[in-house]
Amino acid sequence: MNPFDGILWRCTIFQLINKKRGVSHMYKPKTDIAKKIMSGKLNRRQVMQAMGAAGLVATTQFGASNLLAADNARVLTWSGYDIPDMYPGMDPERLEFTVADDSESMLQKIRAGFQCDTAHPCNADPFRWRRADIIQPVDTSRCVHWNDLFEDSKKMPTTYFEGKHWFAPCEFGDTSIIVNPDAQPWINTDPGKESIMMLFDERLEGKVAMLDSAADSLYLIMIGMGIDVTKMENVTIADVDRLFDGPMEKLRPNIRVLSPDPTTLEEAMMSEEVHAAVVWNESSWNTGYPMLSPKEGSLTWMCGFCIPKGANLDVAYDVINAAQSPECSAFMLLEYGYGHVNKVGYEAISEADKIERGLALDPMTHLQNGNFSNEPKPEVVDHIEARWAEWAAGVV
Image (cartoon, rainbow, N blue to C red; front, side):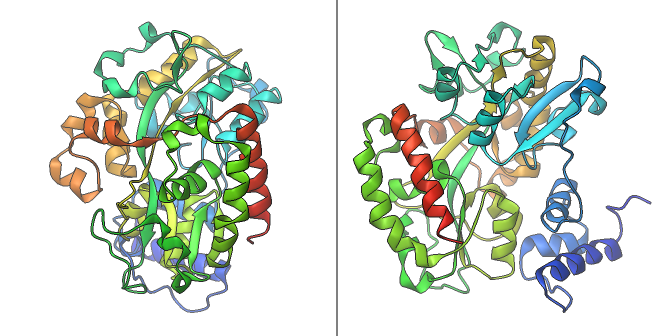
């Protein structure tokens, strides 16, 4: 029997999750994701994420790459992206996944000598990775879907420089805030009406969850404060210190959960441990809670693939071509609720499906108007990471 079939099995998952949380009673679904699980409508990836968060399954970490075939694809990626469905047309047996918490962890792992064929960072990272001399340019002539990609995804300032492409774009989305309007009815969920700075409201004391990522949570707060994250090269160390010594200290009492894992934040929202969470737009789709379109704008991001030095190039382009395909576009849009750079695949998705997932009907406008952060000066990047780590350690 397929373990993803049957109501009894799905109910058992939530009993086990609640047992891990210390909840003795049977989980009573209050949000869309819970109802989907109970009704059998939750997709395989979301169930596996929920099980992983509960400690019921473990993502394989591949340390013994010498035991695998030479043409296996060594993919360094995020949790939740370590599934063959994202790489249509590739033999699942060829895919060797290693999971990292964030792009900084990927960078440090490769710097330390880890060998892989592709890594999966986001648009703000390639400039720094190039400076660290760990990646090589992308040969777009080997990217079979390149001409089908949205033009604005191809030449971002942090991914195209020195006259070369250092990044093969794939999916895009937003970092913003999902909220529980029943628990906090004062929050205005109408587009363009609420401020990012609502996170500081005393009514949310101990009721906020955030991604443990300066490039997401901190940058979103910077947007709320009127700082132009598209011009991060203008930010100084003194600016960073003022931010952490002032506003971030004031925010501290409101933070209940800080985690790099979106599933952890989603669970905190579903259990009503928190009432607001800084997350990626997938979490709105997963939980059913509305995501704010703040009046200051959201933080927009695009993730994709870099090719580390020492990669098997034939394998690397197999991965990139699978991830940029229209078939992957359908998977990313329908299963994750993220945008995808393949315009053929994007346009093939129905308008109703896009609206249901909060996706832009006009992705070019969304990309052109997005707050895509760029890279601060190297010493400022290091200072942001150090101050964030110090701040985060004092939160939980």
